[in-house]
Image (cartoon, rainbow, N blue to C red; front, top):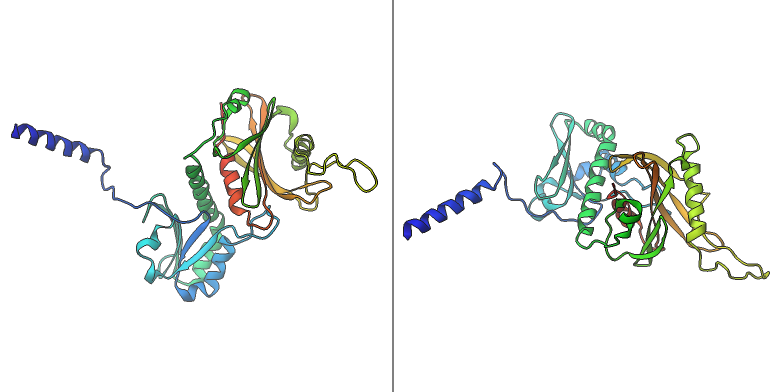
Length: 334
């Protein structure tokens, strides 16, 4: 009996050891608020030209918001105190001196999941040059990390609206707190209440010839979203009478004073057009930012439109928009 128990214990230990990857080390869970980056740099670097270059990269205003908000909230940590719990932030930018000029991007260095970008140089000028030359890479790395993290957080309680897949042949992941506001043929509108307003998602299908890729593409997209706004998103005063006894018409349109931004991107390995801008209600005082994606579905000869927009006066909107963008990036088309 003693020999049998010893054999079972030995076999269990061998099996458990076999489950581990070679050289795999234990890492604690990463922490930190969404869109917060820890910058590890000496105080004199942070207070001088290097710090200014870092802020020009990470804290530049986000395009498409009604007020200036930085892309990331950054916190400086001197290398001497970068230990213990402060190393657990999900996104870390380290400045290392007296080394060859360059940039390295690593995963799960101090915690999991984590992105650590190291920018090095022998002089301040070299470090600044590396930062400027790799601005897009740094931003994309941290931003993609935050989109993935927000998707992970939302996956804990997902919606169960099966009709999206039944009618549009796609899946999209968003929290169950979103409620159905409108469903009509190939159009879906969901909304949730937030601190001082509400957040919205709409999903719809368009014919393949609805959008032509040319110099007027952004104008075409704006006309499409304005027609949808006029049909579905009415203002509080719509149908009321003004002081002259005339019937008011209030609906969502794209704000003309703020030029929308258009860029090409990829969603579910398919070409997509991302448009960012501001919306407003006619004959009313409501408005806010939106992000619209038109996904080219060549297999099914159609476009899939997915848009997120918010109304959140008097509060920062950056993180709300990141959530909407992370939802859109979860689209999978059959």
